[in-house]
Length: 262
Image 1: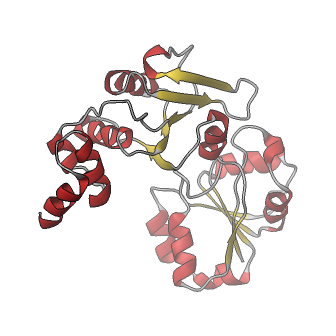
Image 2 (image 1 turned 90 degrees about the vertical axis):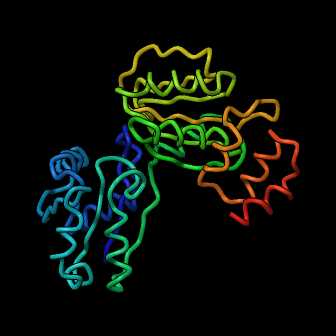
């Protein structure tokens, strides 16, 4: 049996009984970083009499190409990332696909996740989309952020301490009146929440990993993209038609027909 086990994102008490039991019973633990996982097990008073196998984003393909599926069927196996839910901006997805391909029984234990924790703390209501980390630089980053701001949905992003100031400046330039929520050190002693319009937010410091929640655009907010820029966004035709209708004299129906021909 293969179990995907979430680990605490800060507060050790957030480990669940099911997660503890899975870690205790495990004969093999696949982990993003064996050192981090062994440290966690020591803190949880779980013996290290197990086999630890490193499985991270840089070696997944190599490890899985040599892995005997029967091992996962015959032994108690666990996968953990360094913190939080495996497969959410962390390795784990390829192991899930491996299990599906080889008919290996598996389960996912619910648990700690920074994105959902921050979303609830934000107080925003409505549909949301998780975008993980933005591209680091260039037009790809700029276009992705513009797409997010004009998607009509609440956006959840992760950002590193090295780029959080850059992201905040970009938001101030592109959507100064947009309501945003920032969270860091979630579940820890120095947990921090900051909420307000992009133009008004100043960071006390940049340390720590950040979760950023960007509210959807209010109806009164003017779109920052040109007609052609919106046409080139990787969005469904129906959504693009509605956006284009807001900045042109054409109806969404007319635009939909035009885009369908392209």
